Length: 346
Ligand code: ADP
Ligand code: MG
Image (cartoon, rainbow, N blue to C red; front, side, top):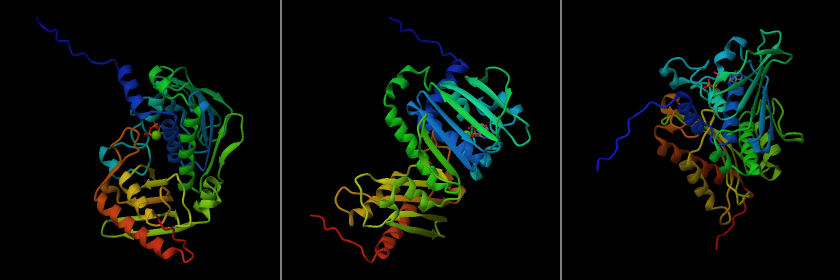
């Protein structure tokens, strides 16, 4: 019996776009991270976030950055439209978070998106709604301050399975709150606020605060009073690292590990595990530290374009760099605290 060989057909563009969008925006937190990064790229000094139902129903981010020009509204939500990258080679020295022009497009394919924005050159703000990458109608003038307000409603309204998989608004809110906390620690000169719709702020940091003050505000005094400052450079491997971590007087069941590489919030399981392993010698069993590190690598040694949500990056000499950092941290911990309490593990 002859088996039927199906013809190969080109996917419709909107199908392609929705598949791509599903990779970039996996849950509310990914969408919010992209929007925070856009606000940072736009040089905002104040970023306020409001969330309803864990971001599944509604979330809004308001910044006081450069704003979006009215002329750009037409294409701002199309895929691969960006004000940040022009040549592929520029990726090596890209100083902005964004470079692919995919975030707004992706969100507009899986949610209802609205933008209000005003640049310093405009006398009024403009508002517009977007669907599947396109403007629904011409931007309307309205009153507003300089900066941008982006509102995202009914995330995954057209992706039933995804929507059903994300059933717990509380869990989604928790993830959003973690993201905002981490950005607030790393960008202490920028004011961040996060709240649930109609409620008081859960997170509020002020402009020109500092890193330890924000750690205290967000993670509490128990962590803040046990912090050790860490500042280390390795010229051979061409990196610098700064940050704060708790000394051995502090320990907790939950491991808090915050890592920024070249100002990007990323995961690096290798480094995370190795640092935890050092603490295991000093902390009670199954307890962990709080660690915040900002690692600066030569941009030439890092590839930021390896993951759709950009949460992973690849870099050269990874294992040597991890080893160098962990050795330095261990030395720092040993030297840091005269009043150190040693727990003996039995
Ligand atoms: P990318 O950040 O990769 O350029 P996005 O889809 O995230 O792509 O954004 C597209 C463009 O929209 C950006 O290049 C920027 O010019 C503009 N933009 C988005 N968000 C903001 C914002 N909050 N303030 C100013 N401009 C913005
Ligand atoms: Mg972006």
